[in-house]
Length: 135
Image (tube, rainbow, N blue to C red; front, top):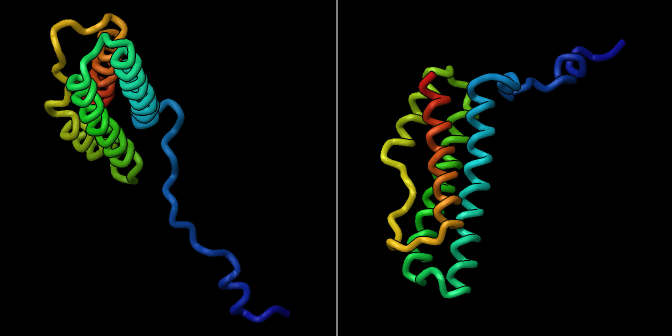
């Protein structure tokens, strides 16, 4: 016969939360944040390429990179808010509060079409995240 202490301590208690179902609003919003992160990185890479080609000023490139840091931080904060065990109503409120006033950076007047397209995609993904959490 085994001592009672071994039986009682054999299985540690689980403290993890149950992940959201694959088609839940939280999962869909998280998928959008991953796409947002990729789009922000693509915009930065495009800005660097254009700067190296002499088609984008260093000042605008620094503006873009500073904005990108805030965009990635926002992305991380959204993912963190969606990763809690709180109700969807609470998570939605947190995400909406994070998105208030967030928009692409103001850059020079003559932005290359490739960078404009990358920033438009970022803006569309922000809109999709807003739409996902307001449903």
